[in-house]
Image 1 (cartoon, rainbow, N blue to C red):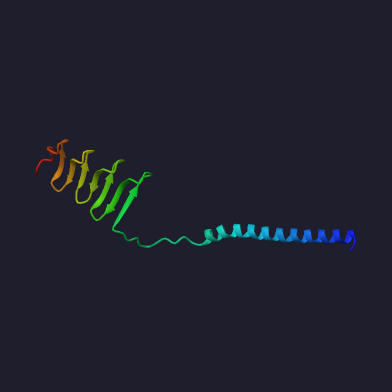
Image 2: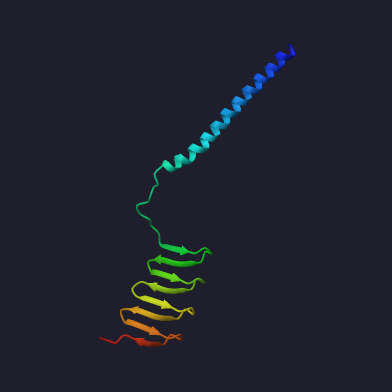
Length: 124
């Protein structure tokens, strides 16, 4: 084989390898483009009913800030201390976990920091 024939053979092999590489790269790019589009086309399935015993809302530091359960809706402060509850009545606790306000069947009751009733709605 002459040098020209060897050179021509090597160039043909390089061109063939180049074509294969371009096809493989094009196929990979097509695949990477199609996969996210397929996920976007699939309709989002929304459940009709969600069943749970309790729902909790947590903040960025994983502290429970609110909860909904069969005992009502409860709100917590940044330290996780229960501050208010809405159920048969509305209760509000201070930072020392002392009930300060109660709104319910007995009326509206306001207590001081020791829990002693300071004011209550008049009896009817």
